[in-house]
Image (tube, rainbow over all chains, first blue to last red):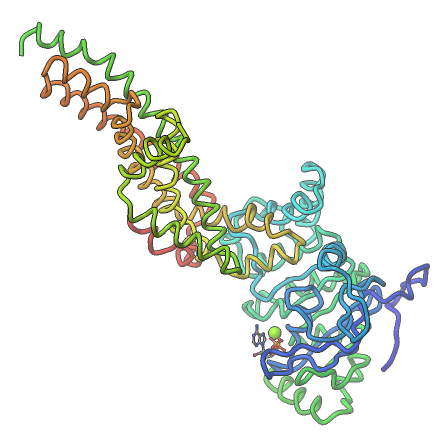
Length: 270
Length: 236
Ligand SMILES: Nc1ncnc2c1ncn2[C@@H]1O[C@H](COP(=O)(O)OP(=O)(O)O)[C@@H](O)[C@H]1O
Ligand SMILES: [Mg+2]
């Protein structure tokens, strides 16, 4: 695989520690092998775009990373700290330790937004800082207002999710994740539930984050975003990484048959 | 009715109103503790482990099948025989807490089930502990959903406090019976009782409904949220 540093990032101390590292991560649901010994390294500041057919394990990969789903085998390290190691003969950290690390380092944005419906946009964004990090309310509020302004929703901060469009809700969800200042943000098809005319505003916010050097793992079907914003493109099928590399190279000249087949299908429907 | 009758009638009011005070104060206290117990039951019923769920299910099942009056006598008399002598008011509140806690446990659990399961994950990826997710995410939504049902239980609780007159809590009913047994003016006295119960009941309901609407402003009336409401919630 090719190695690359995000454009403009200057190497400093600790920069060689990957933001995320997976070694031999496997997950099965019953007899269904959903992740099949996945090895993956994501550098700090890198924008990793993950594509693949439905059911190939993309969501499960993100969910295993953030701890919503337990692994069956393998090791995960986040910013140099091991959160789980199920390989034979290796010690694994306690669930509590793992959770504390994930809490500090990872954030996630879902396809279906999943905002708290009983709280306003502003309260949604403040919730994590106030009730998880125990930040002072005033400071959390100021931060949340700044983040909502950043995603273009300053005037909507007192609206409830149900009073916002899908695109606006998703931008609140991104602000909510950002409020925890995560090292890595996981995006799981965050524009798939949106009307086509609303995807642009969400992708624009993500592109801006990418420019600011935020490490991101982005599962998406937006090939334009993958090509323009991604540092690396990874194609998954049946729980395995089939091919990865520079997005333009993978998209324009895929090396594997399965990638070619998938891309011809996706690109034709777009 | 002549003026003398009216004088006499009004003469009963202060004593009876003093009894009404107990009713008015006991209702919110018993309802608050029943709600807390109901929340604990609902959380327990949601536990992944059977060892926690099953006893709670049984307890609720039994508590709900026993007449409220029997609960009251158990707390006041049976416990006393077993060595736990409680003041009548404490026994009464305890009994009503258990009965209504059992009902509310089921109601709140229904409200919990009506919360989108993805809300748990939203809390988890923000790093919330289980308890924080309950407190900040699940319960606020579940309680809003069941609020109309809760209100009707509030009124039932108000009525049920009359049972405490039977274990010497000097509430409205207790004093009315006392007065009536002295002067045999049952008709007049119970007319006043009826009117007082009616007025306070109506007023409580009005206050609750108003508060209910205020709380519901927080939850916008989107289609999605209407779906989130449990069918039980439509019963009032
Ligand atoms: N909780 C679950 N229980 C059982 N099977 C699951 C579960 N989650 C995902 N799967 C299965 O795992 C496979 C991969 O799913 P997923 O990771 O959602 O794929 P993708 O996101 O690439 O579409 C699918 O076959 C799916 O049916
Ligand atoms: Mg998926």
